[in-house]
Image (cartoon, rainbow, N blue to C red; front, side, top):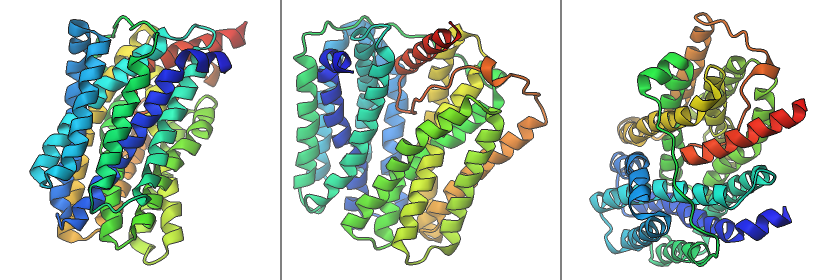
Amino acid sequence: MISVLRNTWALMLGMLLLMLGNGLQGTLLGVRGSIENIDPSTMGYVMAGYFMGFLGGSKVAPWLLRRVGHVRVFAALGSLVSAAFILYAAVVHPAAWMFLRVIVGFCFSGIYVVAESWLNSSTTTENRGQALSLYLMVQMSGIVLGQLLLNVADPAGYDLFVLITVLVSLSFAPILLSTSPAPVHETATAMTIRELIKASPLASFGNLLLGATFSVLFGMAPIYATQKGLSIAEVSYFVTAIFFGGLIFQYPIGYLSDRLDRRYLIIAVTAIGALTAAGAALFIESSYAALLVVALVIGGTSSPLYSLLLAYANDYLEYEQMPAASGGFLFINGCGAMTGPIIVGYLMERFGIHWFFITIALLMFLICAYGIYRMTQRVYDIAPEDSAPHVSVTSRTSPMGAEIALEVAEEEAQNEEN
C-alpha cells in the first residue's frame, strides 16, 4: 500500500478534493433552491442537467482526449467546473443552474476518464488492485465527507459556493504538477443497445431503471429533506446516510455475488430496497432516526446494484467484450438518470413530497419483478466458480475504470487457481 501511495498520492489527493466539492454541490443546490422558493418540479430539471451533461460527455470526452491530450483536457475541464461552481451563487436562476449543471456533468465525465487512465498508467500488475480499491474508497469518502461541509456556512450565502470552487481548483494542482507521465488514451468501443439487450435483458432494463433511481436519490434527496422541514444539519446527515450505505454494503453484496445465483441476489436486493422505500412513504412521519435508517438501507441496496448487474451481464459475455459492455451500460444508465429527477420533481410538486420514496419503491420493484420474469425465460446454469468475477465499480466509473477492475479481478482469479 505504501508503494501505491508513493506512485498515486497526487491523483488520490486530487480526487479527494474534487469529490469533496462535487459531493457538496448537488446537496447545496437542492437546499439553496428551497431557500429561493424554487418548486420541486423546476428543481427536477436543474438536477437532471448534471446527468444530461454526463451522458453527453461520455461520448465527447474520448474524442477530446485523442485530439488534444490528457493534460489539456484535464486542465480545461477543471477550469470550467470551477467557474460553474462560483456562478451558481452569482446567477441564482433555475435556467442558469440547469445550464451550469449540464456543463459540470459534461466535465466530470471527462475528468473520470482522465483520472482512471492516469491510475492505470501509474500502477503495475502487482499493485493495480490495491490502487483501484484505494481510488474507489477515496472517491466515496470524498462524496460522504462533502455532505458534512454543508454545516460549515449558511447555504443562503456565498461562502459554501466559494468553498466548493476552491476545493475543485486545488484538486487539479497535485495532479497537473505531478511528475508522472500523461497516459496514452485507449478506449473500447461500446456495444450497441441491441447487442446488450440480447446478451442480458435483465442487466439492460435494470440499468435503465437504476439510472433513474440513482438520479432521484442523489439529485432529489436534499430537496425532499428541505421540503420536509429538516434543518441544514439534518439534511446533510440524511444525504450522508445514503452515500454511506452504498459504501458499507458494497463489499458484502459483492461477496455474495461470487457465491450465489446472481438473479436471486438482484431480486433480493431490489425487494429490500423497494419495501424500505414503500415503508418510508407510508409510515415515516416525524422519526428522524428512522429516516436515517431508511436512507442507509436504500443507499446500500441501490449503489452496489450497478456492479451486480454488470457482473451478471458479464456471465454471458466473452472477456474481450466486457469493457465494451460496461461503456454501453453506462450509456443506458445515463439515459435513465436524465429522466428520474424530472419525473419525481413533477410528482412531488403535484402530489406531495412522499412521492420521492414512492418513485424509488416503484423503480426498484420493477427491477425486482423483471428479474423474477427473466428467471422463467432463461436457465442460469453457470456455477459460481465459473461465473464472471464481480468487480466493485459505480455508475461514475468510466469504461477505462471498469476495464482496470476487470483485469484485476481476472488476475486474482487466475492466481487463486494456481
